[in-house]
Image (tube, rainbow, N blue to C red):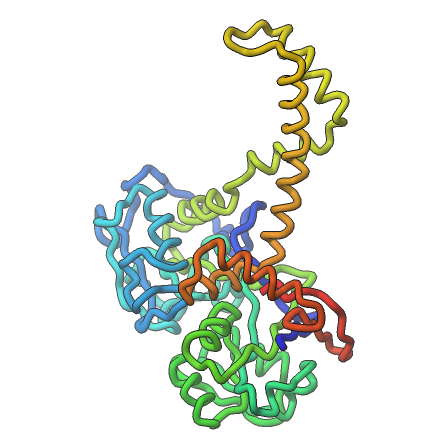
Length: 377
């Protein structure tokens, strides 16, 4: 049974969303640049150098090969590159250890993509794009262990926890859980997973999509014990890392913002039509369209009336589907895709799992209250 721990400091999860510029966008004076496609001041003229760690972990990358364009972060990198005017043949991938991406000093990449959470501390050593992915942190434990029965943050106090060094996951342990036992710190998530399997730690903290991949494909005897719930403030977001003085920051953020805003026209349509009374829509279509005397357009009132009904109710049905799709958290879909499920299977099975009352949809808050609220992760 997965649980969501609702505490004031918890982070939100999510994905690409329509909205204003993310919190990672640089507001540094002079952070503007000519964003002419393919004409940016990159590390190598005519090339776009993208950094990431090795191994490049699933479900963010496939087969430890960032250049294949498969899975989420590889696809994001190529989507950003394409919008900046750089084709696949102009992309150069560079090995950059996780902590080196946001360490002080000059960067040898144009941007780095490696599940790096945006934070004020990291902004002191580098610049960030707008957030491209909203994420939650989660706890993973072996099913047979005591830690798997945790129902609240308080239940984790006497648990031996582990996480990768320098990550937000470790920050959640030290700053928020504050366990009695000193947490184990590992250079890579691989070492943390090995420690979990061999019993060196009771549980590990990782981001939620990684947690689903671990339990679904790498350590099937483990389960996602719980996730840290949404915060009323800004969500934790992954952002692209750039050099502190990079002239590309505003261009890259603009591209990320544009990708986030895909679907604006559909939103405008549903908002407009749902706010329009059906009788007004019928009058506009049945009487208004023939008055325009458009060549080749029928004036049959039955067909026009039917079209008005379709226009109106398709907006309402679209909202029904949207609500159902969005109730499946994007990180759960990403985890499902990493297991080989199709998009349709990921949505259908994820929605079914989240809808089961008293099952994986369990939710626990810091007061040990249990409420039926489908797991949206």
